[in-house]
Length: 123
Image (cartoon, rainbow, N blue to C red; front, side):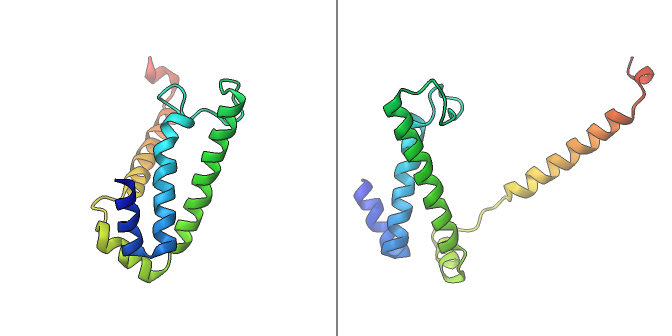
């Protein structure tokens, strides 16, 4: 299955780009077993919860993800590669960053209201 995925991404995006996408998918798949110990959050890389060998593997996986994402951002910032990506996966229907900013602005407004409300009105 992974070989088919690798060949598919290489055919669409090119050998280098497809290889990077494939490696990133493998690292992301390993992330939940290597970098997350409590099934909830990523364990800090310098945590005492890791055994020495597991710490090294977690650090390598985190660094590989970081390096590959930076390379992929550089590659897909080019117009022709962005067009291929949008053709293959489509354009996202919702913009999560805009939704986050809207929620953040609402929370900021509520926070200011709370700060400007006198303590006598709260009780």
